[in-house]
Each structure stands twice: as C-alpha cells, then as structure tokens.
Length: 408
Image (cartoon, rainbow, N blue to C red; front, top):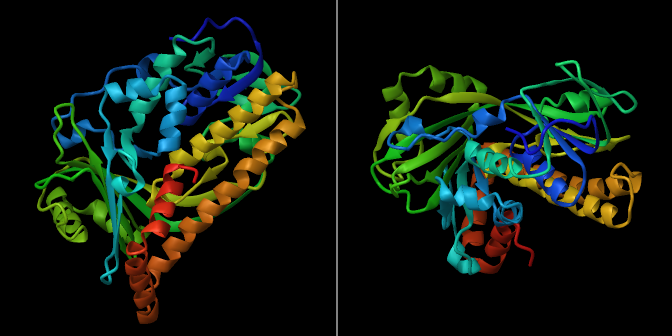
C-alpha cells in the first residue's frame, strides 16, 4: 500500500527509512507541498496488519516508547495521534525514581504541572501503524519492500530492484547502523556501555497506578513502564532492565521462574508479586553521535544521527525533536523558494538540534556514571540530592517539564 503510485524517479526530498521517525518526517514534508518519496525495506501492508488483543504478556510488543507531550503534539498535527488513541496506549500520571543503595526517592506528578499526563507509553508498532495509515492517504510516494544499495550526492539512490532515484535532498532515517551516514563519510563519536538492555512484558499482582517506576542500581537501571489492555487492565508493565553485559547474560540464561523471582527482588516488590513474564529480548547498548548531521544533499535524523542510553526513555522523543526542527526549516525554505538542500537551511537544522541532543546525552551519561559509583560519599551525595530535589517542587517540576517538551 502506498501514498501514491510510484511514477516519478526524481523527488524534492527522499526519506530513507519508514520507521517511527522517517514516516513522520515524510508525512510532514508532503503536507508542506514537497514532492516526497519514502523508501522502506519492510512491506507497508505488513506494518498495517492489526495487532493482537492483549490478554497475555506475550500479546504486547516488547518495544515501547514513552512519548512526550511535544512528540504527541507533532503526531497530532500529522493526523496520526488519533489512530494511536484508538488503540492500546497508557498515559502515565506519575513517575517514581529511587536508589537501590539508599533512601533517596523522587516522585513526579502530572497534577503538579497542571497536566493530565507526564507522557504516554505506546508500543512502537502502534505508532508506525498510525503513521502508515496516514501515509496511505497522502501524496508521499512510498517504495516499500526495497532496500537502498548505494548513494552518492551526484549519482543518487540505487535500489536493490535496479531503480535509481534522484532527489535534491536525501534524509537518512535508516537507524543506528545508518548506511547513508556511512556512505556520506559522516564520522561519529561512539562508545560501548558494556551493558545490555533486557526487555519484556510482565503482569503484576498490584495495578501500576498509571506510574512509571525506575530503580537505579550500580549495575544499571530497571524501569517498569505502565501498559493498558483494551479492556482497561492496569496490571501489565513493559520492563527495560539495563545491566552490565555479564550480568545481563546471566539473567537471560535463567529459566523463566528464576528470572521472575530475580526481577521481583530487583523492583523490591513495588507492585507486589510478578505473576507472569513474557519472552525476553536483549540488545547491546552503545552511545553514538554523528559529529555532523548534514552533508552535501544529505541530512540525518533520529537514530541515524544519535543513539542514547534508554534510562530516561528519550530516544524516540529526540528523534521527533529532529523531525520538528527539520520540518520548521524546510517549511521556511519552501516559503522562500529555496532548495531543500540549501546549505544555510541544513546548517540551521543542525544548529538547532545538535546542542540539544548533546546536552541530553551528556545528562544521561552523567546519571549513569553517578549511579554506577559505589563509594560511600557518592551514595550519600546522590541520596541526599534526590531527597532535596523531591522537596524542591519548582526545580523538580522544571526538570519534568523539560522532559515533556513543555517550554516554560
């Protein structure tokens, strides 16, 4: 299924990668009047297939995102958020963070910010499906089930079905292992955390109270993110358990019952007994940041430009921040009759996003290092700091507003 039939081989803008970020960007560009193409290796028809009705932990997708208010507003402007709301999603009203090695605890409450929620937990496939539904009724030329075999600024995009596509601007939304970034020669700064993130879905005896729970330990954070079934069952959570590689491998090797007990202890039975655990998945954690987001005729967005530790759940929101900024700059270019590949346009996009993304990445790295330290003085400092921050409502709420994308 495509937005319109594939006829033209020449585009104003060609987006490579039809995931959560690339699909949103292509849709927004089309709405601005650009002749837009989207290349995606998967079949869109498969992405549009309806999800399962949740009655068991394995019915939820293990990959979820904590969508901020700013990202929700972007998806709403694109017409996709109404489709998300029609399916499974869970708005969370609170967030509780605590230190495993002390008494420090912080609780964030949407009511203190005069908001209904702090964000919304959504299965990634639900967001992609919502965007694909809108793309089907758009003017975007969708080329699905094909992969990009090569690119250069002069020769254009080569597809594995033999076609060659040209575009004034190519946008790489092709993920952390972006081939477009590699072909362009854009260098990255990156390092391995020597950690893996274990993800799965659990059912707990106590309801999650529409709260995201996060416990920090020296070997990594554990997050319980609230989920909601179609019938309104509040006993399911998606977990992200980041652990040092050796420990993650040990946990993945456990039988389900042993893992369930370890997980129950790790979350300190905050939600009572864990009644069931879905199939587990683990993936290595690596921080990566492109030194430049743009090159001649190319721009990078989302994971192609930056990947971040999942401890704050900001990966998708940083990608949607890229989309918003690039849409702003290309919308201005359209009004001024500039080429989408104009260097001043792309430079403005990079200036707007690079500093903000680096600041978030630095903050997350600082948090990770702070909680990884086990010295008595450091433990006292972070626990005292957490208690102090929890009692300082204006500063605490400002931090929460920044994470939500609320400008104050």
